[in-house]
Structures are given as C-alpha cells and as structure tokens.
Amino acid sequence: MDEPEGKTGTSTSSMTAIMRRNFTSLKNLPYQTLETMLLMLSAYFEHDRKRDLSERRLMNLVDLDTLVTKQLIPGFEQSGQMNFTIRDKLKALQRMPIELDNFIQDKQQYFKGALEDISAQIAILPNALQNMTGGLMDPIANLSEFFDGSFDDQVNVTKYFTMIRDESSSFQKSDNKSIKALYTSLSQLIRAWKELQDRREDTLTALLADCDNLMNQIRAIDFAALIDLLKSSRDQSECLNDDYAVFLVGCTGAGKSTLLQFLGGSTFKVETVDGAVREHYKPVIPPGNPDLEKFITSPFGRSETSTVNCYPITYNDQKAWFVDTPGLGDTEGHVKQIANVVGIVQALQRCKKVKVVFCVSDYDMANRMKQQGFI
Image (cartoon, rainbow, N blue to C red; front, side, top):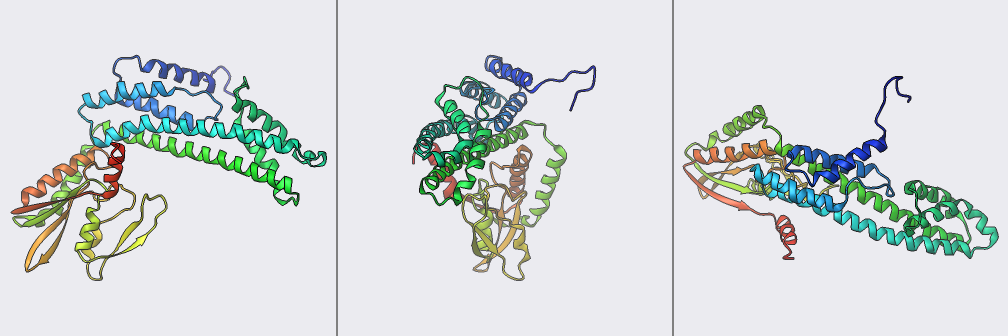
C-alpha cells in the first residue's frame, strides 16, 4: 500500500538498523529499567523468529550473555525480586539461544554435505533423466554456495528449500531406481530443514514466553486482584478454626492436589496429554463426594490451586483437615505469589495444631540435579 502523500514511514531495514544499534550499545550503558531491557529482548526474539536463516542477527550471543549477566541479573537482585523461578528463566535466556545456535551450525554442516551428495547423484544421471531435474539445479547451486560460505549476497534460504520440495514432488511416482534414490535424498534434506525451522520456532516462542513472564514479575501489583485472592483464601480456611490440620506444601506441580485426591478416596486413570512433559494421573472422584472437585490436578506443571483448600479426613476416630496449598514459586506472577504466602500464614494461624507435609516431585528433583551437574 502506498504511503499518504507528504508523510514518510520507517522502512524495515532502517528499523532493523535502529534496533541493532540499541542492542550493541545496551551492554555498555549503566543499569537500565528491567522492563525496558525485557521489551528489547522480546523485540529481538520476535525479529529472530521471523527472519530467514540467511539474514543478519540483531544481536550476537556475546551481547545477549552480557545483557543477562551484567544487567538483568543484577537488576532483579537490586530490586529484591530475585527468586529461583526468575533465576531459572534468566539462565534459560542465556542457555537456549546458545543451544539453538549450536543446533543450527550442526544442521548447516549437514546441509553442506547433503547438497554435495545430491549434486553428485544428479551428475551421474543419464541425459534423459537429467532433464527431469532441471528445476533443481538453480536452488541447489545457490544453497550450496550459501552453506559453503562463498555467496556474498543474502540468499532467501526458505525460498530455495521450498523450490526443491515442489520440484521433487513428482519424483515419488517414478519407477526409475536412480530417481527414487534422488527423491529419498531430497526428502531427507527437506525433513532436516523442517526440523530446523520447528526447533527455531519452538525455542524462540519459549524465550518470548519467558520474557513475558519476567515482565509480569516486575509490573505494578494489582491490589484489587490481591485483595480478592486473600479474601477467597480467608473464606476457604474458616473451617480450620481451632482444629487439627495437615498442610501439604511444595512447589507448583509437586503433586499436592493429586495426593489429597488419593487420600480423599479418588482412583486414577493414566492419560497421555499432548504438550505435557509426562503422563497424567487423572483422578476419578467417587460418587457422592463433590468436595474433591475443587482439588484440580494438571499434567503441565502450571499453577492450578489459587487458594488454600481444605478437606476433612477421619482416621481411627480422629478428624483432621488436610489443606491443599498454592504452589511455592507460583507460575502465575508475583500477585499470586504474595497471596499464596499470606493465605498460607493466615490459615496456619487459625489452627489448634498443625503438621506440615512437604511434597517434592521426583521429576523436578531430577531436573534440578541435572542443572546442577549431579546427573
């Protein structure tokens, strides 16, 4: 669309140049506001997600590491907001781009060798068969030069892989062994390209989500939401007045709600859920026990319990309230974290006698040990 007469716009290339200058200078500036830096990082990851493989990066990995190490980590520490969840996400901002970059470099080496092999396969075809491959020569030659590092101009890598995929689609029906073998090689090349594209998309989407989560941690407290959560926790814990209670405490996803479902008489069926990191044991609540429905379980390691929830269990004629508490390190932001801690303390203060059960997920423990290098 043409721009209105008398007005000027900022081109994509000039906007990219402005952002690149900002990233280059950011590491040398004194402490910036946390939100400004996270917004800059989000813009970088969003740009990187949309760019073609051949386009120049806005920021190199050294600048990114320096930004996290010298600006973001001290910024969160100075603001008094640093916790295990934030530290893990900041480490991910350092680690995941490096892992992605290493993956891309490995794939680039694979593409270089695969294209050489495909070119050799085409070269030994009889002339009659080589006519079938005429549409492949230009994209293969351009990609070979690009991955060999001898192509001076930017190459639209995605465009040439798409051309190879489209040109080779008819080879699948050929009865000729050489053409079938060539089709197999080309299919492996396209699958590797799709794998690279998917890995980039997944990694950069996760990094954008981490930036958004971190920004939610530093934004102003929503006092109306905080008051509503505290009121709900207070109402739920009224039953504990001067009574005996067992508090289930642990990080988000540790299995507190699942344990309480089990103690309350639920049975379980195993489900495999798309997008979950492990199988999910879904509770089957016994008939006539609707109170257990408020204890929600999830396979995704995210917060489901928003306030303290109480359930009475009688054993050997002794009744005690079992209290399901919101997860420590709640994944829903700092308002929920504040409400969780205050709500738990208020519930504890109501009780006559308390026992605390700490729930620990073996999955999370293994991940933590891997991060620390023990396994």
